[in-house]
Amino acid sequence: MLIDGAVPATLRFQEKREAILSAAALLFNEHGLKGATLADIAGSVGLVTNSVTYYYRKKEDLAKACLLRSIAAFDAVATAATATGTDVPDRIRAFYRGHAQLLAAMDEGSQVPLIAFNDIRALPEPQLGELFDAYTAMFRRVRGLLKGAQTTHLGRDDLNARAHMVLSIANWMGPWIDRVEPAGYARIADRVSDIVVHGVAGAGSVWSPLDEDWHPTASADGTSEAFLRAATVLVNEQGYRGASVDRISARLNLTKGSFYHHHDNKLDLISACFERTFAVMRQALIRAETSPGSGWSRACAAACALVRYQLSVEGPLLRATATSALPDTAQREHVQATLRRLTERMTGVLVDGMVDGSVRPLDPAIAAQTTVAAINAAAELHRWVPGVTPAVAADLYVRAMFEGVLCAGVGSG
Image 1 (tube, rainbow, N blue to C red):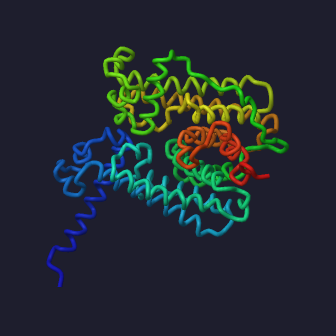
Image 2: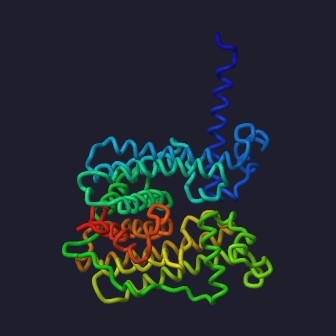
């Protein structure tokens, strides 16, 4: 016979733990892993900090639990998509549909909030190692969606690069899909999967990346550019809060005094990093808007130039997800508005292609979102394709953006 109250106590423990996880996910998404505090999380669920440590001893343990919950959710969606059969397009469609269903359920309140993967590398060991093991296992599940009779021509690097693109586009859907009502998310997912599988090429458009010798450039002087690159890399890895002045200075073997000689504060530096990233993107998109040739060839050239930049010694670009942890609301809104406007410029180039017939009839706004998502994710490509270089990035990665994940791969027909 159970002791009176034992089951309710267990249920209360589980319910409170779930409430803490949900509150933490929301605050981590808003402030970053470094910015959200245990006190903030405790207060949001009516607890004191010591009560939260009863469930999770350290903030890093709580962050790990939140991230493992998100990884498990993605893995469940990929597992369900795998069960749909052996046809690669059907599995990709099921994956995006499942992800859209998850997003809709979160928006409607029937699904617990999930933390984004933005700052996963900001966690220390041993939490980081455990998370990478879980994330890698989930990544392999997603890669398995691409394996089938239609992709026997693809090697390991091709499959890894395309799985990274598929997963990154799913991650990117969350911030923009709410422009429609949750009931329309499945329709958006079908359009995303159609673009991912079949690409955007119109009849007669042939893959031939242009302007291989041209690349956008940053305009800062040598010392300022070194600070901007170091800060960009650290924010991409550690988030805004994790990229401290000490760490940025140490990356360059300089003192904090040298930092403050060039920058009034960290926020000004990170703002300059965003402006540098936007200037590089703007150069490529203006060239795409004004160069001769079809809309298809110009969009391909812009994407190739930006992906090569991501992998070059001048890169990477600051990842778009870094906006969520900017402490200044006005600055955050400015950055997000600028990114939307740049994405609209890519939309315009794709519309040009639809007009001239080089891009097939599709939703150009969604195609621009998937393209920008893949470009943004290229900074992480080396983690899944070790040794990838700017020289091979176009054929390995960008081609699949524009011709779809079933297209020829590096070294294949």
